Amino acid sequence: MEQLNMLEEKPVLPLLMRMAIPPMISNLIMSMYNIVDSIFVAKIGQDAVTAVSLVYPIQNLILSIALGFGISLASCISRYLGAKQTLVANKIATHGIVFVGIHYIISILLGLFLINPFLSQFISDSTITQWGYDYAFIIILFSFSLLFEVAIENIFVATGKTALPMLTQGLGAITNIILDPILIFGLCGFPAMEVRGAAIATVIGQIAGMLLAVFILKYKIKEVRINFRGFRISSSVLKAIYSVSIPSTLMLAVPSIMVSILNGILATISQTAVATFGIFFKLQTFVYMPSYGLMQALRPVVGYNYGSKKWFRAEKAIKISIVIISCIMLFGMILFELIPAQILTLFNADAEMKSIGITALRVISPAFIISVISLLLFYKFKKQAITSIT
Image (cartoon, rainbow, N blue to C red; front, side):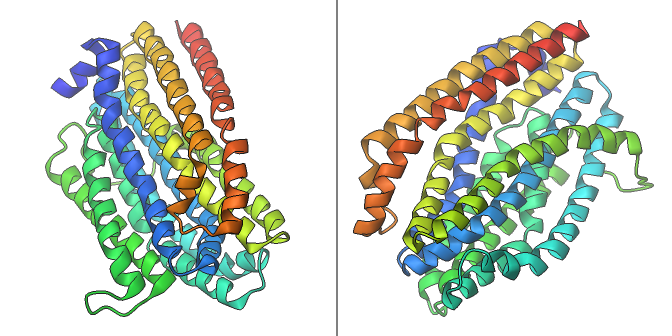
């Protein structure tokens, strides 16, 4: 309960920093999955990078579903904890876990049947298509680990324990980094599985993170309890969850659609263009993920203080967050403008990839600053909501 009291009593800036730094770090760790995979896969060859790049929208779509639903869980749970309605918060958390399972079943039914038609839209090379299929099949088949891990981590965040996701994601990332070279290149007696090895390393890391998250939720979290005994689906709970989850998921899924469209266009130019764009899109997660981490910490602060009717604290937290995120975006733009060649070297880029990539990084990076406009609009709508409630 001390953690919950902190949400409505501690000065806003120190509170936000204390809660934001762990998820900012953990989100950077999460972005390491795709970055590390790409660095090692690049050593196989450019065709392998192209295959993984084509599959990235599928990965991002699954992550969007997980994050969108997790965002909603954190928002709803923290709001009811702030209103001292613990039983309702427990009910929402239980519904969340049940419906994550349903999301996984839907992902399996749709994903596995659509992989080949999806890949065939972009490329005719049989080697690239097969590598892409192998990678996507493994990622989709074991996507339950990512879906459950993200949902449980957002339950942690809702209770103010924002450092815990850093532990679960850290375990997953370390596992992935260790296993990537072993399974891709066939070290320590393992066969060389190339692209499939990268996918297997990723899902093993995610499963490790999920298992740790389940353990912590069961034995360490006291504020929220999952209880399946006598469980019945509540339409009011689902409405509360999905009214936030659906728009959040759609917003997060837009990049997947954009990447797929651009991959289709770039595939008519060259495979190198597809691979280069795939690398850029993964690199930009290093800029956006800390911002997402800050927003992740902001939600329980805003939600809890809404529930406690302390509107002024919620508004102040939003203002501070926008300033910090603006600084992060500016730093990212400067980095991409100054050292694009050195960044691309990490991915074993040849001369053609560098000639495309250096220009691309410098041209696209100013969009980081432009994206802050969406945060300003977010603040405006939040302010209107505060005014209408009071």
